[in-house]
Length: 444
Ligand code: ASP
Image (cartoon, rainbow, N blue to C red):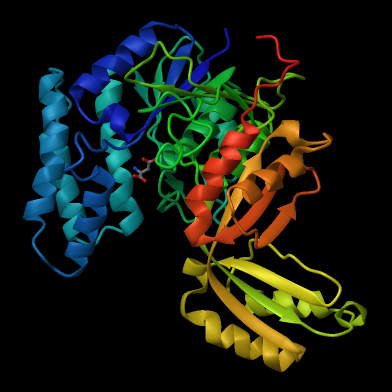
């Protein structure tokens, strides 16, 4: 029997009633035998996430401040779950020891990782499952990437297909054996690793929405749900701000073709969004969605005969590399070149970069523009089809949006447009409306 790995996000483990829902979800399909929980999230909008409280405790301990306030909030959350589910997991003592560890200088990563660890202990006790500690099974290499031996070790550790396992998300160990966490939201990555380790038939990612929408509902009214999407489409959409799934969580499962299903713990009857390696030949819409991000800066220079100067592009990009700034896009023409970067990343380095460009490249003109937005229209259905770009630009013209940057990946499944921040919402609405015409060839 092949297995399904189920990752449950923070809101799905926020209190004991969510634990009860999880048990029902597992009972509904006997293949669901690997559970990867996050740390408890907010029960209501006024509350803090446990992970944030843990970081706070760590920072307070560093300053030798008393942990009483935040730690009692943490303790209450776990003790409530334990008591309300009638468990005897010895949480009070475990928490007391943990508090001492923080006070005695536990690392930031160790402290944060206990959010998932303690939730995993309670989950395993509640489900009668075997607890698998990522400390012994999930390994980072010296560059901070996942060491492939993880798949072997974790696969062996969870080899019994009839058993139920609980693997806490968000952490593993570095080459020295110290606890190390992923970046925020990283339990998605742990779930993907577990799915690959047991070669699951499906990686279910349980959250508090019924999958992804084809545009941001704060901008577009009632956007369509996204039923099925390819790995590369989702990667593009999540990178551009469609924030349901950690973008680094795709690689481990994509490499071996395990589909991902984003599901809603509070509405398990909804099918959610299915992420697959290959979409059917004809889909209802040509696009998977429209997503974007605000606040980019563009450094643009002009230099006569630039195209004849060997090494020009390398020198230009090298300036950003030495300043530790990653580059988003590089639109260029014969005698001009621009580099688009996230404004947050460029921060106070703008002047230093301008100075280096002037000195090293001696441009005829040089300017930096801020407050740009990037918008991606993403869809496998955009490739090799006449007229898709026309639709995009007619929509923007009709909405009276000035296009500042145009960039199309060579695989043609995404068209990226740069506009002024002030036109961002208007452009997204116009693009969504224009591109969401149902495909006449679709019979579904
Ligand atoms: N608890 C961690 C965070 O809040 C990881 C996760 O939930 O995925 O970022």
